[in-house]
Length: 460
Image (cartoon, rainbow, N blue to C red; front, side):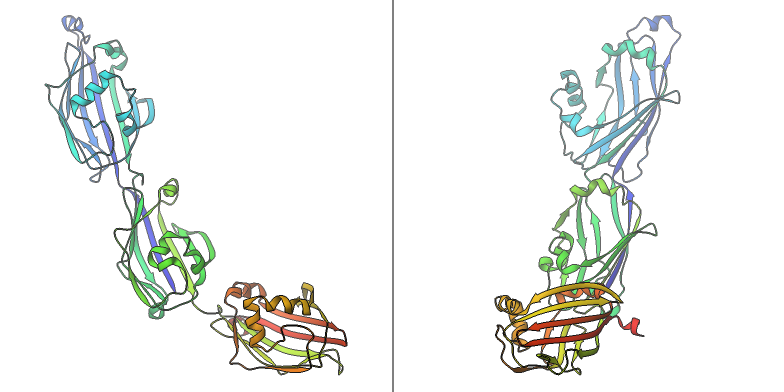
């Protein structure tokens, strides 16, 4: 099973306002003696530079007048959509030269208790909300609403000239980013075990949560392991193995589509609940890094051994005719596609009370393991281990010493699952020689087993 999705992130939920004001000095001596020192304010242009999706927009014909009594009068409206947060970045330039740059949390500024009463009264008179969240609405001013700047009149000479103010506001937790799913491809074809409907999608909400759409069809499976790779703007960022059954119980996205996020899964069709949202708040600082075109490819093998085969090339009883335990050289062991082992073998023993086994494994000509095991002690431990006890019983192995003279036979109807060990198959791939020497109280047993773990394409 495989699926591919491309995601493109663009900056959308933002506000941007740019205005240019001209502060000029009249040459009239009589006006110069007035409170405003003869200065006038003229708004040359207001531009809503965040486009049609802007959260806050201002009338482009907004006007401001400075009277001789140092009163500011304005006419125009500012409109806004719902928002919960607003972080403003501003730049102020004078005569083409930047003089001030900074940022502020407008929600924090609106509600801060240390505001002077003069400012608080001004904002209330203009109808500016005093706290977030802000409901959609508009604020309009008329010349009858007056703001007196008498206490600031000494700064008017410093402000003389053409002043440009750029303000960009990012609203809500997603900081203006959105997710658009351009394509979802079920690349395993009609036989895919997990497939998504054509309308499957993921969207980012204003409150920085993910909402899912569409449905996923699931055939019965018990395992799902493979690889996941992520590319950005055509360049691979990473590729790594993934066990969906293990990861599913930890990843909220998977848990919403696969009940419990764990295996096994029964045949079903599952559709996203629009009321369920996955919080992404803790990841929001990473959203900017991910901006661009993303491709995610997931390839999974279900209930299989990953394409590997186990081949026993030869079994040699190397201790001669007096060997305490012998294995039929014609014995076979097979790894099935559903990751089970089945064998057809015969083993005989003349009986023993003690047995210490030395195992040496050489892979591709290099020694990789050497270990000594007390067989009798291990049989007793295995008898108290449910999983090991099942294997012992299945293959007719005695669960304790002493072991009486006997013959053990297995047929291919008996199987043992290697599912939890299948990730070790890649490491085990190649030709290995297993040398086993067992020292009994009545003699020795020796086996040399030539086996190979390989993928079918390697065998040709």
